[in-house]
Length: 239
Image 1 (cartoon, one colour):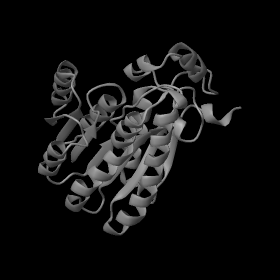
Image 2 (image 1 turned 90 degrees about the vertical axis):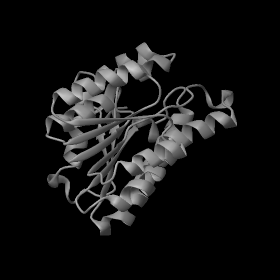
Image 3 (image 1 turned 120 degrees about the horizontal axis):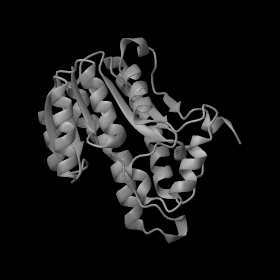
Image 4 (image 1 turned 30 degrees about the vertical axis):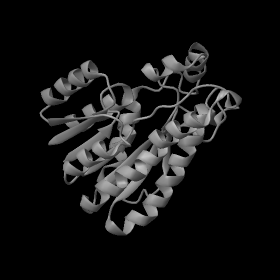
């Protein structure tokens, strides 16, 4: 099995990469932006589980990086986990913030699909990582939430277009997960407290998201097409 995980060297992406390596993946490509130390640490951990590792460094929307993805050859699993964005109220944002956030979180999935899908075989899977901000209004989350809503819509369109080829496209939407990404939120502690107050009674862990991704890429999910699986401990069910 050949796997690519964008944003695959830290947090949720790292957990996903490790999950596939433990499941016997032959090769795991890890996309990342700039933290070389984290990338080397993740690569070492994945290699220790028996998988060959390829590091893909840079902005996933750049033509150079997309060519590197194309050069990976046939992929059985593509997980678009990389995400970024400006965290501030809507009226304090600028057009350049919108472009950056939408490109990295939503357009990148389309660009990745263009280069990867033609080389995929029946049974392959594409999974995008979304968030509850796609459906719910979260403080300071205007741009990222909007980009994740676009991402989920794109998942549905790609799912219908690629299903005849035997390629499944789905998304996983996670609740509050305590990763480095939360450091950019001014209300981080409030978010963590709210996230842990879900019906299950604990925060969502990166491994919880990884488990859902692994399921969507397994034969058991053969008839799951264009869906967004919510993994939030029931957080979104309560008022």
